[in-house]
Length: 463
Image (cartoon, rainbow, N blue to C red):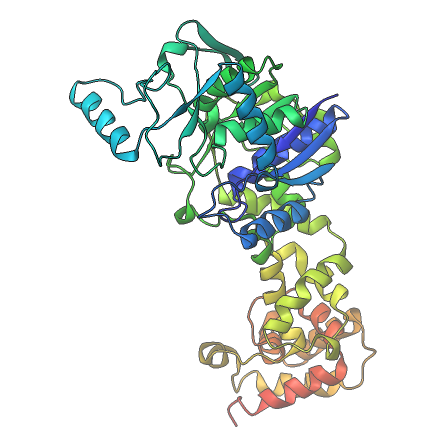
Protein backbone atom coordinates (compact mmCIF):
# COMPACT_ATOMS: atom_id res chain seq x y z
CA UNK A 1 0.00 0.00 0.00
CA UNK A 2 1.18 3.53 -0.81
CA UNK A 3 1.97 5.52 2.34
CA UNK A 4 3.01 9.17 2.09
CA UNK A 5 3.67 11.78 4.76
CA UNK A 6 3.89 15.49 5.37
CA UNK A 7 6.47 16.36 8.00
CA UNK A 8 6.67 20.11 8.73
CA UNK A 9 8.76 21.74 11.44
CA UNK A 10 6.60 23.86 13.80
CA UNK A 11 8.79 26.93 13.59
CA UNK A 12 6.29 29.20 11.84
CA UNK A 13 3.05 29.19 9.87
CA UNK A 14 2.14 26.73 7.12
CA UNK A 15 3.59 28.47 4.08
CA UNK A 16 2.63 28.13 0.44
CA UNK A 17 5.52 25.82 -0.43
CA UNK A 18 4.78 23.50 2.48
CA UNK A 19 1.09 23.45 1.65
CA UNK A 20 1.83 22.44 -1.94
CA UNK A 21 4.12 19.64 -0.75
CA UNK A 22 1.37 18.45 1.61
CA UNK A 23 -1.17 18.62 -1.22
CA UNK A 24 0.98 16.56 -3.58
CA UNK A 25 1.64 13.95 -0.88
CA UNK A 26 -2.07 13.86 0.02
CA UNK A 27 -3.18 13.61 -3.61
CA UNK A 28 -0.69 10.81 -4.37
CA UNK A 29 -1.93 8.76 -1.42
CA UNK A 30 -5.58 9.36 -2.33
CA UNK A 31 -4.92 8.57 -6.00
CA UNK A 32 -3.50 5.17 -5.08
CA UNK A 33 -5.93 4.31 -2.29
CA UNK A 34 -3.13 4.67 0.26
CA UNK A 35 -2.58 6.43 3.57
CA UNK A 36 -1.44 10.00 4.26
CA UNK A 37 0.42 10.57 7.53
CA UNK A 38 1.08 13.84 9.37
CA UNK A 39 4.27 14.14 11.39
CA UNK A 40 5.46 17.19 13.33
CA UNK A 41 9.27 17.43 13.33
CA UNK A 42 9.73 19.39 16.54
CA UNK A 43 13.37 18.65 17.38
CA UNK A 44 14.41 22.27 16.85
CA UNK A 45 13.85 23.05 20.52
CA UNK A 46 14.71 26.75 20.28
CA UNK A 47 12.29 27.56 17.44
CA UNK A 48 9.46 25.01 17.73
CA UNK A 49 6.29 26.39 19.32
CA UNK A 50 2.80 25.14 20.16
CA UNK A 51 1.39 28.13 18.26
CA UNK A 52 3.21 27.09 15.09
CA UNK A 53 1.98 23.53 15.47
CA UNK A 54 -1.58 24.81 15.76
CA UNK A 55 -1.09 27.08 12.73
CA UNK A 56 -0.01 24.04 10.69
CA UNK A 57 -3.00 21.98 11.88
CA UNK A 58 -5.37 24.90 11.15
CA UNK A 59 -3.91 25.35 7.66
CA UNK A 60 -4.26 21.65 6.86
CA UNK A 61 -7.85 21.63 8.11
CA UNK A 62 -8.80 24.74 6.13
CA UNK A 63 -7.38 23.26 2.92
CA UNK A 64 -9.18 19.97 3.59
CA UNK A 65 -5.98 17.92 3.64
CA UNK A 66 -7.22 15.18 5.94
CA UNK A 67 -4.63 12.74 7.27
CA UNK A 68 -5.16 9.07 8.13
CA UNK A 69 -2.60 8.81 10.93
CA UNK A 70 -1.00 11.33 13.29
CA UNK A 71 -0.04 13.90 14.07
CA UNK A 72 3.07 12.19 15.40
CA UNK A 73 5.65 14.26 17.31
CA UNK A 74 9.37 13.49 17.15
CA UNK A 75 10.07 14.69 20.70
CA UNK A 76 7.73 11.95 21.93
CA UNK A 77 9.87 9.33 20.16
CA UNK A 78 13.31 10.04 21.66
CA UNK A 79 13.60 6.56 23.20
CA UNK A 80 13.19 5.02 19.75
CA UNK A 81 15.99 7.13 18.23
CA UNK A 82 18.31 6.15 21.09
CA UNK A 83 17.44 2.50 20.57
CA UNK A 84 18.42 2.65 16.89
CA UNK A 85 21.58 4.66 17.63
CA UNK A 86 22.60 1.99 20.17
CA UNK A 87 21.97 -0.69 17.53
CA UNK A 88 24.26 1.11 15.07
CA UNK A 89 26.94 1.55 17.73
CA UNK A 90 26.81 -2.16 18.65
CA UNK A 91 27.13 -3.26 15.02
CA UNK A 92 30.04 -0.91 14.33
CA UNK A 93 28.03 1.25 11.91
CA UNK A 94 28.28 4.32 14.16
CA UNK A 95 30.70 5.74 16.75
CA UNK A 96 31.05 8.34 19.45
CA UNK A 97 32.76 11.59 18.52
CA UNK A 98 34.12 13.84 21.27
CA UNK A 99 35.13 16.86 19.17
CA UNK A 100 34.34 20.20 20.75
CA UNK A 101 32.77 23.04 18.78
CA UNK A 102 36.12 24.84 18.87
CA UNK A 103 37.92 21.81 17.41
CA UNK A 104 35.37 21.50 14.62
CA UNK A 105 35.60 25.22 13.79
CA UNK A 106 39.40 25.06 13.65
CA UNK A 107 39.24 21.92 11.48
CA UNK A 108 36.98 23.62 8.94
CA UNK A 109 39.03 26.80 8.94
CA UNK A 110 42.19 24.84 8.10
CA UNK A 111 40.37 23.03 5.29
CA UNK A 112 39.10 26.30 3.81
CA UNK A 113 42.61 27.77 3.99
CA UNK A 114 43.90 24.74 2.09
CA UNK A 115 41.17 25.16 -0.56
CA UNK A 116 39.33 22.05 0.61
CA UNK A 117 35.62 21.49 1.16
CA UNK A 118 34.88 22.00 4.90
CA UNK A 119 33.86 18.66 6.44
CA UNK A 120 34.38 16.44 9.44
CA UNK A 121 37.67 14.57 9.02
CA UNK A 122 36.68 11.35 10.81
CA UNK A 123 39.26 11.72 13.57
CA UNK A 124 37.19 9.73 16.10
CA UNK A 125 36.01 7.15 13.51
CA UNK A 126 38.50 4.43 14.47
CA UNK A 127 40.28 6.27 17.25
CA UNK A 128 41.97 4.35 20.06
CA UNK A 129 42.33 7.52 22.11
CA UNK A 130 40.86 7.63 25.58
CA UNK A 131 37.70 9.79 25.56
CA UNK A 132 38.18 13.14 27.32
CA UNK A 133 36.49 13.25 30.72
CA UNK A 134 33.39 15.34 31.18
CA UNK A 135 32.65 15.63 27.45
CA UNK A 136 29.31 14.43 26.19
CA UNK A 137 29.86 12.87 22.76
CA UNK A 138 27.70 12.95 19.66
CA UNK A 139 26.96 9.77 17.72
CA UNK A 140 28.15 9.77 14.10
CA UNK A 141 27.37 7.40 11.24
CA UNK A 142 30.26 5.52 9.69
CA UNK A 143 29.52 6.65 6.18
CA UNK A 144 30.90 4.30 3.48
CA UNK A 145 34.28 5.49 2.23
CA UNK A 146 33.73 4.28 -1.34
CA UNK A 147 30.87 3.44 -3.68
CA UNK A 148 27.86 5.64 -4.33
CA UNK A 149 24.47 6.56 -2.92
CA UNK A 150 22.08 6.39 -5.87
CA UNK A 151 18.34 6.69 -6.29
CA UNK A 152 15.83 7.25 -9.06
CA UNK A 153 14.04 10.46 -8.16
CA UNK A 154 10.39 10.27 -9.23
CA UNK A 155 10.56 13.90 -10.40
CA UNK A 156 14.20 14.58 -11.28
CA UNK A 157 15.34 11.19 -12.58
CA UNK A 158 18.48 9.31 -11.57
CA UNK A 159 20.72 10.95 -8.96
CA UNK A 160 24.13 9.51 -8.02
CA UNK A 161 26.41 10.88 -5.30
CA UNK A 162 29.85 9.45 -4.50
CA UNK A 163 30.15 8.43 -0.85
CA UNK A 164 33.54 10.13 -0.81
CA UNK A 165 31.63 13.43 -1.08
CA UNK A 166 29.83 12.75 2.21
CA UNK A 167 31.29 12.93 5.69
CA UNK A 168 30.26 11.05 8.84
CA UNK A 169 27.10 12.90 9.76
CA UNK A 170 25.89 13.34 13.33
CA UNK A 171 22.96 11.08 14.23
CA UNK A 172 22.44 12.04 17.87
CA UNK A 173 23.55 15.36 19.32
CA UNK A 174 25.28 15.55 22.67
CA UNK A 175 21.94 16.42 24.33
CA UNK A 176 20.41 13.20 22.99
CA UNK A 177 18.17 14.89 20.42
CA UNK A 178 18.35 13.37 16.92
CA UNK A 179 19.52 15.40 13.94
CA UNK A 180 17.06 16.05 11.15
CA UNK A 181 18.45 13.35 8.87
CA UNK A 182 18.43 10.65 11.55
CA UNK A 183 14.95 11.42 12.91
CA UNK A 184 13.44 11.50 9.43
CA UNK A 185 14.90 8.14 8.47
CA UNK A 186 13.73 6.32 11.61
CA UNK A 187 10.26 7.88 11.37
CA UNK A 188 9.85 6.98 7.70
CA UNK A 189 11.04 3.45 8.45
CA UNK A 190 8.77 2.93 11.47
CA UNK A 191 5.77 4.44 9.72
CA UNK A 192 6.30 2.30 6.62
CA UNK A 193 6.48 5.33 4.34
CA UNK A 194 6.69 4.12 0.74
CA UNK A 195 6.91 7.48 -1.05
CA UNK A 196 8.75 10.53 0.30
CA UNK A 197 7.48 13.57 -1.59
CA UNK A 198 9.16 16.80 -0.47
CA UNK A 199 10.81 20.02 -1.62
CA UNK A 200 13.99 19.80 -3.66
CA UNK A 201 15.90 21.65 -0.94
CA UNK A 202 16.12 18.14 0.57
CA UNK A 203 17.84 16.51 -2.43
CA UNK A 204 21.25 16.79 -0.78
CA UNK A 205 19.93 15.09 2.37
CA UNK A 206 18.69 12.03 0.50
CA UNK A 207 22.07 10.27 -0.10
CA UNK A 208 22.84 10.64 3.62
CA UNK A 209 19.45 9.21 4.53
CA UNK A 210 19.94 6.33 2.11
CA UNK A 211 23.23 5.46 3.79
CA UNK A 212 21.57 5.39 7.22
CA UNK A 213 18.90 3.02 5.87
CA UNK A 214 21.56 0.81 4.29
CA UNK A 215 23.44 0.68 7.61
CA UNK A 216 20.22 -0.58 9.19
CA UNK A 217 19.64 -3.09 6.39
CA UNK A 218 16.28 -1.40 5.77
CA UNK A 219 14.37 -1.00 2.49
CA UNK A 220 14.48 2.37 0.74
CA UNK A 221 11.33 4.38 0.07
CA UNK A 222 10.77 6.03 -3.30
CA UNK A 223 11.83 9.68 -3.33
CA UNK A 224 10.32 12.54 -5.31
CA UNK A 225 11.69 16.07 -4.93
CA UNK A 226 9.43 18.91 -6.00
CA UNK A 227 11.05 22.12 -7.36
CA UNK A 228 10.67 25.23 -5.24
CA UNK A 229 8.21 28.05 -5.84
CA UNK A 230 9.60 31.38 -7.04
CA UNK A 231 8.04 34.81 -7.13
CA UNK A 232 7.09 36.35 -10.47
CA UNK A 233 10.53 38.04 -10.51
CA UNK A 234 12.32 34.68 -10.36
CA UNK A 235 13.47 35.13 -6.77
CA UNK A 236 12.61 32.71 -3.98
CA UNK A 237 9.06 33.27 -2.75
CA UNK A 238 8.94 35.60 0.23
CA UNK A 239 6.65 38.08 1.99
CA UNK A 240 7.50 40.81 -0.47
CA UNK A 241 5.72 38.77 -3.17
CA UNK A 242 2.50 38.84 -1.13
CA UNK A 243 1.07 36.50 1.47
CA UNK A 244 3.09 33.34 1.97
CA UNK A 245 1.11 32.00 4.95
CA UNK A 246 -1.83 29.77 4.03
CA UNK A 247 -4.03 31.23 6.76
CA UNK A 248 -3.37 34.75 5.47
CA UNK A 249 -5.33 33.73 2.38
CA UNK A 250 -8.24 32.72 4.57
CA UNK A 251 -8.06 36.08 6.36
CA UNK A 252 -7.96 37.87 3.00
CA UNK A 253 -11.11 36.10 1.86
CA UNK A 254 -9.96 33.37 -0.50
CA UNK A 255 -11.83 30.09 -0.77
CA UNK A 256 -9.82 27.01 0.21
CA UNK A 257 -10.84 25.11 -2.93
CA UNK A 258 -9.46 27.96 -5.07
CA UNK A 259 -6.11 27.87 -3.26
CA UNK A 260 -5.97 24.05 -3.53
CA UNK A 261 -6.69 24.29 -7.26
CA UNK A 262 -4.01 26.96 -7.66
CA UNK A 263 -1.37 25.10 -5.63
CA UNK A 264 -2.02 21.93 -7.62
CA UNK A 265 -1.29 23.85 -10.83
CA UNK A 266 1.99 25.22 -9.44
CA UNK A 267 4.42 22.90 -11.14
CA UNK A 268 1.91 20.18 -12.09
CA UNK A 269 -0.65 20.12 -14.87
CA UNK A 270 -3.21 17.92 -16.54
CA UNK A 271 -3.55 18.93 -20.16
CA UNK A 272 -4.98 22.42 -20.44
CA UNK A 273 -7.28 22.12 -17.42
CA UNK A 274 -7.25 25.31 -15.35
CA UNK A 275 -10.24 24.87 -13.05
CA UNK A 276 -10.79 21.42 -11.57
CA UNK A 277 -12.24 19.88 -8.45
CA UNK A 278 -10.46 18.10 -5.64
CA UNK A 279 -11.92 14.84 -6.96
CA UNK A 280 -10.48 15.47 -10.42
CA UNK A 281 -7.08 16.28 -8.89
CA UNK A 282 -7.07 12.92 -7.10
CA UNK A 283 -8.15 11.12 -10.27
CA UNK A 284 -5.45 12.73 -12.44
CA UNK A 285 -2.51 13.28 -10.09
CA UNK A 286 0.79 11.68 -11.06
CA UNK A 287 4.33 12.56 -10.00
CA UNK A 288 5.59 12.10 -13.55
CA UNK A 289 3.65 15.21 -14.59
CA UNK A 290 5.49 17.48 -12.13
CA UNK A 291 7.79 19.95 -13.87
CA UNK A 292 11.50 19.74 -13.06
CA UNK A 293 11.94 23.51 -13.18
CA UNK A 294 10.75 25.87 -10.41
CA UNK A 295 7.16 27.11 -10.50
CA UNK A 296 6.37 30.83 -10.47
CA UNK A 297 3.75 32.20 -8.12
CA UNK A 298 1.29 34.45 -9.94
CA UNK A 299 -1.10 36.31 -7.59
CA UNK A 300 -3.27 37.45 -10.52
CA UNK A 301 -3.88 33.84 -11.56
CA UNK A 302 -4.91 32.95 -8.02
CA UNK A 303 -7.29 35.91 -7.95
CA UNK A 304 -8.83 34.81 -11.26
CA UNK A 305 -9.32 31.29 -9.93
CA UNK A 306 -10.87 32.56 -6.71
CA UNK A 307 -13.28 34.65 -8.73
CA UNK A 308 -14.36 31.55 -10.69
CA UNK A 309 -15.00 29.65 -7.47
CA UNK A 310 -16.88 32.57 -5.92
CA UNK A 311 -19.24 32.71 -8.88
CA UNK A 312 -20.14 29.06 -8.47
CA UNK A 313 -20.25 28.95 -4.66
CA UNK A 314 -23.43 28.53 -2.62
CA UNK A 315 -24.85 31.89 -1.55
CA UNK A 316 -25.59 30.76 2.01
CA UNK A 317 -22.05 29.50 2.45
CA UNK A 318 -20.62 32.78 1.13
CA UNK A 319 -22.95 34.71 3.42
CA UNK A 320 -21.54 32.83 6.40
CA UNK A 321 -18.00 33.67 5.27
CA UNK A 322 -18.79 37.34 4.57
CA UNK A 323 -20.70 37.99 7.80
CA UNK A 324 -17.59 38.33 10.06
CA UNK A 325 -16.08 40.85 7.62
CA UNK A 326 -19.31 42.89 7.65
CA UNK A 327 -19.66 42.80 11.42
CA UNK A 328 -16.03 43.89 11.79
CA UNK A 329 -16.98 46.85 9.57
CA UNK A 330 -19.74 47.95 11.94
CA UNK A 331 -22.67 46.40 10.08
CA UNK A 332 -25.75 45.00 11.85
CA UNK A 333 -26.40 42.16 9.42
CA UNK A 334 -29.58 41.06 11.20
CA UNK A 335 -31.16 44.47 10.69
CA UNK A 336 -30.56 44.53 6.93
CA UNK A 337 -31.80 42.58 3.91
CA UNK A 338 -31.36 38.83 3.50
CA UNK A 339 -27.58 38.36 3.25
CA UNK A 340 -27.58 35.37 0.83
CA UNK A 341 -29.71 37.44 -1.60
CA UNK A 342 -27.25 40.33 -1.30
CA UNK A 343 -24.39 37.90 -1.95
CA UNK A 344 -26.13 36.54 -5.04
CA UNK A 345 -26.42 40.06 -6.44
CA UNK A 346 -22.77 40.98 -5.79
CA UNK A 347 -20.60 37.87 -6.06
CA UNK A 348 -19.87 38.03 -9.80
CA UNK A 349 -18.33 41.49 -9.38
CA UNK A 350 -15.63 40.66 -6.79
CA UNK A 351 -12.45 38.61 -6.36
CA UNK A 352 -12.41 37.76 -2.64
CA UNK A 353 -14.81 37.39 0.31
CA UNK A 354 -13.26 40.56 1.75
CA UNK A 355 -14.19 42.46 -1.42
CA UNK A 356 -17.64 40.85 -1.36
CA UNK A 357 -18.25 42.09 2.17
CA UNK A 358 -16.90 45.53 1.29
CA UNK A 359 -19.27 45.71 -1.67
CA UNK A 360 -22.20 44.78 0.58
CA UNK A 361 -21.66 47.35 3.33
CA UNK A 362 -24.16 49.90 1.99
CA UNK A 363 -26.97 47.36 2.34
CA UNK A 364 -26.46 47.35 6.10
CA UNK A 365 -25.49 50.92 6.92
CA UNK A 366 -25.73 54.14 4.89
CA UNK A 367 -22.53 55.42 3.34
CA UNK A 368 -21.83 59.12 2.89
CA UNK A 369 -21.08 59.98 -0.73
CA UNK A 370 -17.97 62.01 -1.46
CA UNK A 371 -18.26 65.73 -2.06
CA UNK A 372 -17.22 65.08 -5.66
CA UNK A 373 -20.17 62.71 -6.21
CA UNK A 374 -22.57 65.14 -4.56
CA UNK A 375 -21.41 68.03 -6.73
CA UNK A 376 -21.60 65.88 -9.86
CA UNK A 377 -25.01 64.31 -9.32
CA UNK A 378 -27.02 66.36 -6.80
CA UNK A 379 -27.98 69.26 -9.09
CA UNK A 380 -30.90 71.69 -9.31
CA UNK A 381 -31.71 70.33 -12.77
CA UNK A 382 -32.24 66.80 -11.41
CA UNK A 383 -33.98 67.65 -8.14
CA UNK A 384 -37.59 67.85 -9.53
CA UNK A 385 -37.25 64.40 -11.11
CA UNK A 386 -35.86 62.96 -7.86
CA UNK A 387 -38.74 64.46 -5.84
CA UNK A 388 -41.26 63.00 -8.26
CA UNK A 389 -39.51 59.65 -8.15
CA UNK A 390 -39.58 59.67 -4.36
CA UNK A 391 -43.36 60.05 -4.43
CA UNK A 392 -43.69 57.31 -7.05
CA UNK A 393 -41.51 54.87 -5.07
CA UNK A 394 -43.72 55.39 -2.02
CA UNK A 395 -46.63 53.84 -3.94
CA UNK A 396 -45.39 51.18 -6.44
CA UNK A 397 -45.31 47.44 -5.89
CA UNK A 398 -41.87 46.78 -4.41
CA UNK A 399 -40.10 44.64 -6.97
CA UNK A 400 -37.25 45.40 -9.37
CA UNK A 401 -39.49 45.67 -12.46
CA UNK A 402 -41.86 48.22 -10.87
CA UNK A 403 -38.90 50.17 -9.46
CA UNK A 404 -37.26 50.26 -12.90
CA UNK A 405 -40.49 51.49 -14.46
CA UNK A 406 -40.78 54.24 -11.83
CA UNK A 407 -37.23 55.48 -12.51
CA UNK A 408 -37.85 55.41 -16.24
CA UNK A 409 -41.16 57.30 -15.91
CA UNK A 410 -39.52 60.03 -13.82
CA UNK A 411 -36.81 60.45 -16.45
CA UNK A 412 -39.28 60.59 -19.36
CA UNK A 413 -41.60 63.00 -17.59
CA UNK A 414 -38.75 65.43 -16.95
CA UNK A 415 -37.14 65.05 -20.36
CA UNK A 416 -34.03 63.27 -19.04
CA UNK A 417 -32.12 60.18 -20.05
CA UNK A 418 -32.48 57.26 -17.65
CA UNK A 419 -28.90 57.43 -16.21
CA UNK A 420 -29.45 61.12 -15.38
CA UNK A 421 -31.99 59.95 -12.77
CA UNK A 422 -30.61 56.53 -11.89
CA UNK A 423 -27.12 57.76 -11.01
CA UNK A 424 -28.19 60.45 -8.48
CA UNK A 425 -30.59 57.90 -6.99
CA UNK A 426 -27.75 55.37 -6.68
CA UNK A 427 -25.47 57.89 -4.96
CA UNK A 428 -28.27 59.00 -2.59
CA UNK A 429 -29.09 55.48 -1.47
CA UNK A 430 -25.72 53.69 -1.56
CA UNK A 431 -23.13 56.45 -1.35
CA UNK A 432 -21.40 54.79 -4.30
CA UNK A 433 -21.27 55.36 -8.07
CA UNK A 434 -20.64 51.69 -8.94
CA UNK A 435 -23.25 49.09 -7.91
CA UNK A 436 -25.36 46.42 -9.59
CA UNK A 437 -28.57 47.62 -11.32
CA UNK A 438 -30.09 50.17 -8.95
CA UNK A 439 -33.59 48.68 -9.20
CA UNK A 440 -32.21 45.32 -7.99
CA UNK A 441 -30.37 47.08 -5.16
CA UNK A 442 -33.48 48.95 -4.05
CA UNK A 443 -35.62 45.80 -4.14
CA UNK A 444 -33.28 44.19 -1.61
CA UNK A 445 -32.87 47.32 0.47
CA UNK A 446 -36.63 47.66 0.94
CA UNK A 447 -39.05 50.56 0.49
CA UNK A 448 -38.77 51.99 3.99
CA UNK A 449 -34.97 52.12 4.03
CA UNK A 450 -34.82 53.46 0.47
CA UNK A 451 -37.19 56.36 1.19
CA UNK A 452 -35.43 57.13 4.48
CA UNK A 453 -32.07 57.39 2.74
CA UNK A 454 -33.51 59.53 -0.08
CA UNK A 455 -35.04 61.89 2.45
CA UNK A 456 -31.70 62.23 4.25
CA UNK A 457 -29.92 63.19 1.03
CA UNK A 458 -32.50 65.60 -0.40
CA UNK A 459 -30.99 68.31 1.82
CA UNK A 460 -27.73 67.94 -0.16
CA UNK A 461 -29.43 69.21 -3.33
CA UNK A 462 -29.42 72.95 -4.11
CA UNK A 463 -32.60 74.70 -2.97
